Image 1 (cartoon, helix red, strand yellow):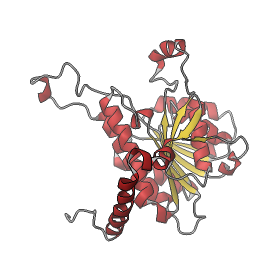
Image 2 (cartoon, rainbow, N blue to C red):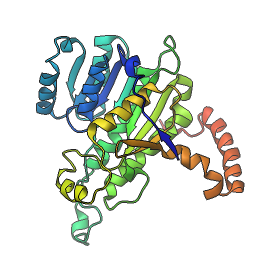
Image 3 (cartoon, rainbow, N blue to C red):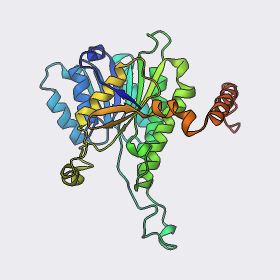
Image 4 (cartoon, rainbow, N blue to C red):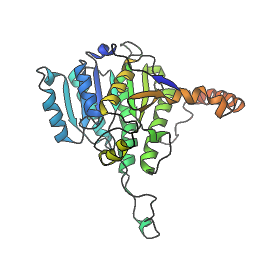
Length: 306
């Protein structure tokens, strides 16, 4: 599995670029906003947490030029119209969008399959908030982002879409809807890379962080640190995100981030496909995939319903 090693000297290219992201008020999103600002980017970030956004903006305004380079938009990522408004604000302020990062997420909500489930309790519909924010929100974001990142007149290969998955996106966990949502984000990255964005010169990648010290994981930190286990800081994950934006050769990557280090699990899966799937099945898949891709270009996978 290939190591993805961030460089120390190549982030200056972000100066002057326009970056749109969700979840920018707290967690991984806030240090991402800070880093992008320090690197000279123009940032439009959305979040539902207005008080945390105000605190972040206040801290950034210590720099006298910040009002022109950071815009906050209150939004609910589970609402499609809010994504349209977010990107519209960026376009209205800066005239284009270079990079888009979907970070907003929530932990497990509700009890879908727990021991309390019974023939009585099953009559009440479970919460879909985790799916609505983590998966549907990412799909909404990606759809709008692709429309705004696409440009025939700008330099090919210099636009990127980064999606936030998790280690739960590819390893088993006991948090069902969170895991389903993060598996879905990896699937979204793969399908976009395979068919929706190559002709538009948009690179699409995903991050799969393991334990990161955020507000969500605060109660686990004493036990985790006592076990001397690898731990990401929010700033380290933000740094990996910025490196993905920089790397013009990075497309279709799924980076597992542990202790501030990153590895490309997608490259590992693809490279070992002949071993875990078998050469014959892998070869048959490649041939059938080419046929299906041809069918898709003719609209075969889209519903005939109006």
